[in-house]
Image (cartoon, rainbow, N blue to C red; front, side, top):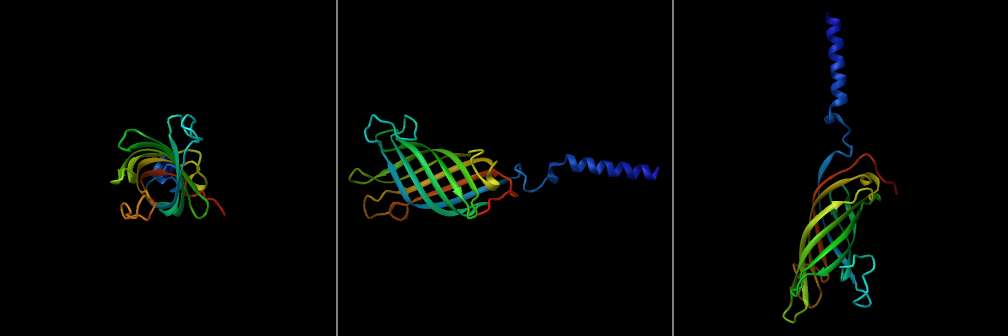
Length: 200
């Protein structure tokens, strides 16, 4: 009887180990963790179509121009990373407020890449001369599944995005940023396979 009880106990432990998600590998893609990061971008620019009736290349028909932003910052689970961001934008009113949809790619030092899509609403701050001097905005982001690499190849997740930017119209910087700088902030949750890494 004692031997039978021991066999039952061992069998039960084996079944619990197989069924329990808590004992899964910590690197499993279902392992969800907070994702935070801020990137200061100094390489910013805009692309306008040659004529108003022509669409912006690579953007949806509603876009009036394309904006790109590149910089480096500290990001959760990637460490010191490069950000390459591109978005399609349009104004929504005469006050200079707008809407954008874009794509942001983070690349870690070892080459692992996490790719997000996002949308945001933003507000322009206009000088006394009627020219925009800065902007801020907020929206949401979602991991673009299947576009990442390394441990983020099958990542999932979503969260909030915020941006503040200086437009170097005059010598007065907005938000304490360097002339022409933008600060991108990301906050949310992601799930990824920590055991799979790129090799450079």
